[in-house]
Length: 314
Image (cartoon, rainbow, N blue to C red; front, side, top):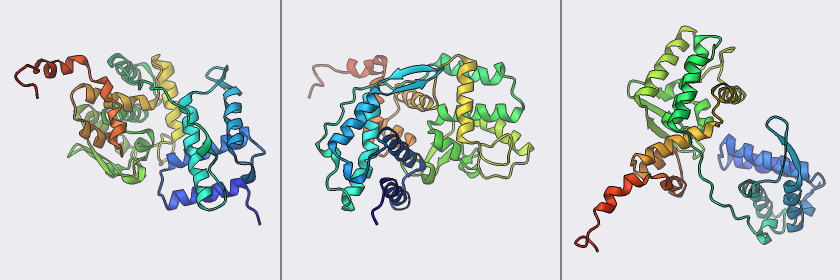
């Protein structure tokens, strides 16, 4: 009996989840790309996958109209987005080919979209101060647990450079205030590698405030960041609503990942060693970390340039 494309994709996801041990975020990216393919090309089937079909997919993707923000209509798609969809679908097509279900990967004969460099968006000192002031003073939170939890989460993001999924996946035992260490376990890390991150005085102070409030309310869940309504973890939807709320109330247009960029750029701007930054960020490839090198300020390099003389030329 011939299997339909969605059934084959489900098998691919299952294999990637249990054999390749990919993170839930990576698997979610595969699913969303495949769902979009089915939405835009509803009649696509295994036997119709070809360079022509995929070219039509990207053409329709470019032309489709979608609603963003406050009912704003928008057309077109960025090259980086095209590259992301292609990368995700390419893994599935390669799996089909390796399992002799597809004669050839259609992307093999298609030109890969060139992606121009985009500066990583980071937050300035006044942006961070505005967000923290909003949490601390401008919003009348329902109770002190919510306020202290939200403050601790934002501080952890820009003081430790965690990804959103890592933040929400933290367990109580991952925070060691005595040693001032935060542990990101491999199971919640995108790179699937354990890493330890030193906690600075600001992070320690805000974590202590939150932990004391959490203890007062008798939570038993092992997840560190908790829901206000249930003895359970703080959810991804709840976090999304929080970021959207803080954007409105603070007047700072930001997203959570910019706090991670801010962490990296702050360290690199203060002469942090790139190998140390790689470890702190949880990057597998140092080339990912190297993208932050362009943010080293000219002032930080002046001493190195001043050291050049005729006598010390090679």
